[in-house]
Structure formats: structure tokens, C-alpha cells
Image (cartoon, rainbow, N blue to C red; front, side, top):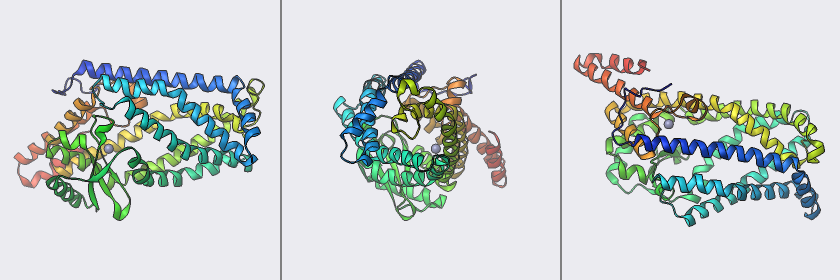
Length: 406
Ligand SMILES: [Zn+2]
């Protein structure tokens, strides 16, 4: 099935190149997943996970350190084994499609930072999971599920402040005129913001971006340099209005609540699926109980399976939120034309596939395909100008007609 292919033209987009890019990315994703499954299966069933657990237990000075030590070693090994494909998919391919100018050195430095950060987050989190499994063998999954919402809330509020500055530089937006424009738009949306920031996203990617960071009075909007440099002011308005839409609708809390719901289902599924898997493979793996930290590769396999099953639900949720946010942004700026040209520019700068296969959208797309978003902007613009022609009295009707189009 195709989406609005005939209806939408994207002049700046090299369609065959965009198709090649999305096929290449899909291949990397599939190969990467197959590799992870093979790697985890081998690590568990060859008995290596069990032997590694014995070796770490023998070396730590305090038995309480056995689980975190095992988790740390596994995290480092996993990082090392995923470097080659990460280099190919994350850097070489991006560079070949002219979507990144990052050097090998810069990329590797980001990977090392990622490893340190991963260790700081994963070691306590996974140790906590095993602690809970041992303490409450019957209902550990419910306790962990209950922790998902606070963990997601803490992480999403801390990430922009503590994590993102590790990888990029943030500063007050230098362009005063643009800053005033963004502030004006935020005021019209009724979203109080402390400041407008810019970040050097071009270090990693040519793709443009914008997002909110901080909470309450420290709330700031961040624009990537790739957005500031390449988009017209009215197009930047469109992007900012979209981000304001997420704020006005409280989408971050919706997302956290949704993640909490999914986390509950996922934890219950692990609780049901993992113990029989561990028991059945015990002879080969040397691991008899999920409370044993050496069950980690088997638990990870179950998590991959659950993640695969949950991805269409996550995608559909994300696409619904994005559609609503697009509509809000067009109403706020009252400019479907700028919205459409923003989407076209995004498509050509990010090499978006104009009509991705329906199965790919179903499993992987957290946003509607770009052609659908452009078509929505065109429909908005048509009913806006129709409303303008019939006089100011029918403007409100015109706007509601535009929102009813999709
Ligand atoms: Zn969005």
C-alpha cells in the first residue's frame, strides 16, 4: 500500500536515493537484530554466561558485588561486539548518504561516552532487577512494573540536563530576532519558557531537530544548528509550533503513562516466559533459575521478543500523537503552506522515504510518513484559503473543517 504518492510532490528530494537509504537502514536493523539474537543465544547456551558468573564471583572481594560485576563485564562485552555494525550503520552509511560529517575519531569518542553512561545506568538498574527477583520471587514483576513510571519520569527530566550535554554543546540562541519570534509563538501558545537554546547537532548529523528540555520554570526550547541554518523563519515557526503542541497536550506525561502500561505488560510477560525458558535450557546453560544473574542473556532474548511484539502498539500511539500535534501547529501558526514546505525540507534533508511499505510503517514509524503529513498541510491550507475567501465569519468553521479532513 502507498500513501498519497500521487498527491504529494517533494521537489528537493532525490527519491531513488531516499529509497536506497531506507532499504539500507532496514537491512542494518534486521541484521543487527539477528546478530543480537544469535549472540545472546550463543552466550547463554554455550555455558559461557554461567562460567563468566562463576569467574566474577570468585574474583570480587564481597559477594554483594558479584551481580554488578557480572553485569558490568557483560555490558562491556556487548558494547565491543556491537561496535563493528554500529560503525557501519551509525557512521559509514550516514556519511555515504551525506547525512553525517562526523569523523571516525569523533564517532568513537561518542561511543566511549555512551559506554560509560550505559554502565552508570545499566549496572544499578539490572542489579536492582535481580535484587527484586531474589527478594520477591512471586511478584517481583509487579514491583518492577510499578517502578517504570517514576524511572521514566526521572530519566526524561534528567536526560536533557545531565545526559545530552555530554554529547553536544548547548547555548542561548545567538540570533536575537529568531529568539524573539520563538518567544512570541510560545506566549501565543500559553507555554512559559525560560529561554531559547541552540545546539551543535551538526557534530553528529545533518538532520534538523527541535525539542523541549527542563521542567517548570527552567523549561527551554532547543533548536539544532542544522534547523537554524537551513530553514526559513516561517518554517522554524512551524517546527517550534509543533513542539509547543506537544507541551500544550502534555504528551510527555501521556508517553510516560503509556510506557508504564507497556512496562506492566512486558514485566508480566517476562515473568511468564522467562522461567520455563531458563529451566528448559538449564542443562546447556548451567543456569537453573531466573534469580541467577547469569540468566541475563536469556532474559534479554525474551525482552527482544516482547519489544518486537510491542513495537506496532508504540508506533500507532506515536503516530496518533504526531498527527494531532501537526494539526495543532497549523492552527497556531494558521499557515499550512509553511508547514508543508517545512515537511518537504525535512524530507529532503533527512532523506525520508516518501511512501514507505505499510509493514515498515506498522512496525517502525513513530511519525506518520512524510507524504501523509504534507498532504495534511495541503488540505489545511486549502480549507484555510477557502475560509478566507468566504469571509472572516467562517474562519472558525474553515479551521474545524481542516482538522476534520484527516
Ligand atoms: Zn512531534
